[in-house]
Length: 66
Image (cartoon, rainbow, N blue to C red; front, side, top):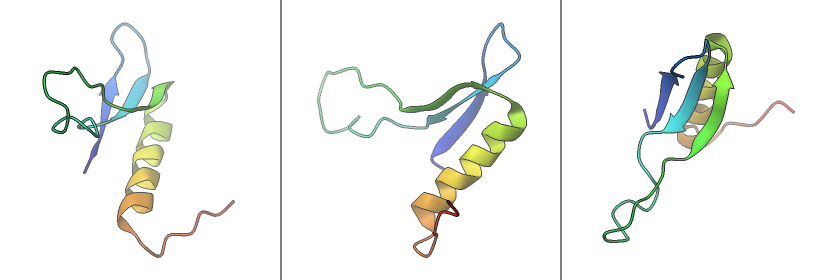
């Protein structure tokens, strides 16, 4: 699973980020940041977002319901 869910310190909310930076290995000696998908959200919504991101990434037949 390439996304991680973490509790925000000092707040009652959670953040969803990518586990690795996209270009971490391509650029030498350069600090790369992880992509943040949500900064502060509830645990239920964060879990839903991780499931959605995994579906978009790994399911070629996935069609958003919008």
